[in-house]
Image: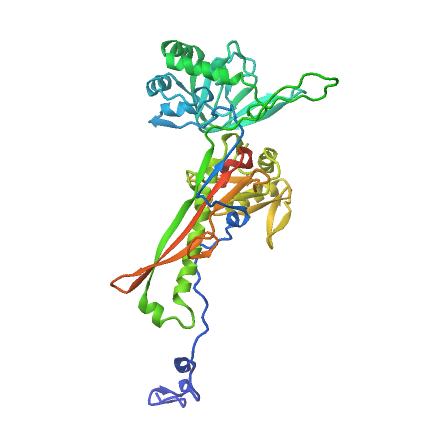
Length: 468
């Protein structure tokens, strides 16, 4: 076949250029570069919204009024197959046993609990029946049901794993249930008869003395928050004798020591000497390292077992969802437990789940502007996204709501500024040394913590289902 008129000797003439190609031209040209970017940088709303308090001594002490409120904790359980048993030491989380540390007695007490299984719709206790047991919910969700003045059934509370009820039955004799408890999901419940506990009291002088001390605390004058009452007179006339009083303080207040997040950044001298144009390599390395450190700081503020908000929320301020997904009713319940709620904090998927529930009801939450950004709000309280709030394997998460600031006795952030080699408030970059491999080291540190000034400053909606 004859060669094409556009080819000579097998060379395609259409591919020959009449001017310099762009590929060749780039050999003499520079490029316009962006700064290095990274995944994982989030808005970090918690760090932005918390008011930060200077802690010059490294430790922050939260002084409060004396409180007679005893433990109302959540218990843990162990199991072998289907047989469930309460962890003996966890029984000290019950109000009656708070502070009791005799392991031998607690082991005996834990062994006396009886396990029962309830199906959805079964009544665990019925209103008006004798209250002769203490109940521990090992697994499942139950609803505490009462009635209003018109005889209609109302939900008083939702109970879930680790909750308990009926402990007052052991203290008071001839008592009756003032409410019913109905299983919402399959429930595994442990119960202890009153008589078994009374027999154990007679056998253990230490337990008997502890129970008497508990009853004495219950007789102390208290206000509705369980604090030592301040005696006052009001509405009187004439010249009656006025009560004398004083304000008592906690003898062992909580102290928060500043936590630290650190890393050592390593940069070779050849890199910092030769490859600094047009961007400073050390500054870019530090910028990205600081971003990662700040992300870790926010994670610690939420999840740290010592001072993290999820672990330090008062158990009376923890609410379980009524039906699983986060509904407007659940959000209202959270708001009703505190004044001046500043913002909600939730995982983005949790916010999406709440939006679906609003759509189902034909509700359209408003948007508000926070620091120049439009965010979803409920009752005027912004719902801020935070991917540091964990999602469990069962696709459940939590929603936090908080009041902030010292003036409002809320949640505050703690930090120390003015430290040596500070580059941001509370964050320092300290040059260490250059080793025999010509690698320079820089210590990057930030010091921080968070504190709850009073328990109702923080609330948590727990067991929020996302896959509904």
